[in-house]
Length: 484
Image (cartoon, rainbow, N blue to C red; front, side):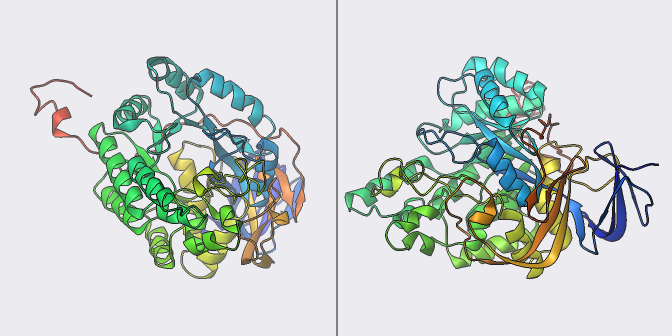
């Protein structure tokens, strides 16, 4: 076979093994993996480095307005470039429906925005207004197009659907093979805490951590899972930040629930002490759920290692440290009026490799699973996430020994700070490929605007997750009535 490109002299790393082998690429796909491959119009010498699937960033806010009207700093051009420099060859940002919008309108808006991407992309819909037309007509059309996941909120007044609304969404998702993602925090707990803090004049950034208690996340995670179990629908818990929340996920997964979850680098790397930096510097670290403490970091690393989480995602939510972002409502305002989120799409994989693989917390195979393979399986990217014949040639070549210091400039995004600034990192991607084309090479962007393609995704892979049948929905126990 004549190859367009051959990657030789590297160590192939997959989610289940590593081996010295070459990769042959033809027409944007992996055509062969073998011990020695000759030929190739273009040959890339991996030089003993790690050759692995390109990262799939499955949680990012790109060119997205928040419910309060703040536009994220990165569009699909800058956001995809940043992702590529971080070792990613595809991503799935959110396409947010706000109250009064149709799903058709949302998709048309994000199709125009996504067309600038340099890497392959899809969307998770955010549903905040599940009208009968949305549930019965618009969401099924989105599923048919290959948008097979969406997110709902249990907090924020303008986004919170309530338990009944969640059950409606979960039921529609199950019927169409889609997966529901959920931001799980108890809205009333948070609002009650905010009022008590405000009454006492405690409004500096550091109080954001106190305003969203660990119990608020744990209660909501448990409630979301029970709602999903009632209708036997697959559920993905995003950005788990607490030991208790992770333990609930572990227990329910062990019992067979159709359940997935992630945590994020910020919960492994940063603590609530960062919110107490001088002046308003703490505003850089406001995100929800909030940063916790060192003991929680240790517990979350344990769950990463033991398989509780399918992925470690960035939750890239870039709001600049100025009046266009964090301080849209003023430079000296109470923490609830500060834009909520932090950047991290380029730092995700280098941080996870350095603190995970290099420090012995996870294996290289686990790194591949957490960075790419599991996201491909969970979110239906059926031609991505593996080094195998027939798969898209989405590949990252890693130097496991390169040492760098994180700077905002090296993130290649549209931000003016990085929460990981100054961290010493070991390991980085040297070459990143998307469908056989080199998009980043030794610190230089090779991709062109609009080079990425939309990914039509398949239903979630539910193998090994038997689910749960509530007695009330079991025809053998409810007089034969089909309720769900």
